[in-house]
Image (tube, rainbow, N blue to C red):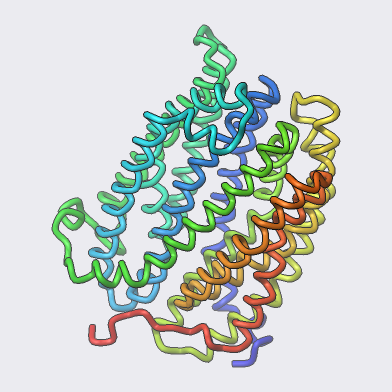
Length: 452
């Protein structure tokens, strides 16, 4: 199969659309939830928005690890799915997520101020973020389990339930934010604590719906609670060997991004605020790209699992070419939406200028981010080349972005827009390595037990 023939492959197109569109809709809902959080907190002021942004860095590390658990598991699930032996892998995934949630919950519950001080020296931001963190940590249990549950369903082509879960979460989170942050309809005005409580309630709803669906309604896997308690321990080794590199990847990547936030936090509230608003806008621009990446990972994984390596390579090359157009589109979206997005926030004019300049830089960086998401998270991980992704992600982040960003921001004192470009320079380097790897054809690795 020639590379360009995939654009005429109707079955492939239908599969990509069937998986990516529901995930894109899910990402849109998640975006709306994040957008409402930042806009409502932004109405309280710059300190509150910065406090929540910094506090969420710790949450983002947890989310990154759960994403790594689910992503690594999905590589196994997608390839094992043809052999219909996935329940034990899911059980190991659930127990690993619970253990991780326990560690992060205890850390945030008992040491919130210490965690905040890692990211910023601003005492007002620390105080606001700490009161947010010690409440929002209760959401880690539901957040972790619901995320891995829903992501695991993608590997078997079940994606629509995610729309129900996240749409419910959107309404609960936004409604409770409106009631508890501002004290509407007779509710107490809790401000930061209200936002944290709203997040906890929303995550509880997510977990309830996801668990009910998986254990009572889902028919492809037909997982039951007893399968989570009594599972085949021989799959622990498969899980450890193949999923650990992805978890390590996400951990080091999340820690690297936290290091970038430490740099921003020491450059002042304006840069932290700009980063928060810019990230929300970038999420919107990448909504379909993330959906396509997930769909690509599933299709590539399924194709590799069947042994049709030539088709997997052709599909990978074609989607890589298509990602160029998507990256250009995402950049235009960010650039054109800059003034509209900034007008939503109650922040000083000087901060608005910083936000606009940083978003201009982001409109360039997002082109490389889109390609990297599809190449590394979609194609290479789907094909089982998790170790290359690990090395590629971590080397460029820790050896380029973090040290160069430290010099640019803390020693040279360059403008925020320039510092932002330097902090994100790893995205440019990753696509060079990723594109070369894909076209070399050396990334296809069948991870399934051949004797099954």
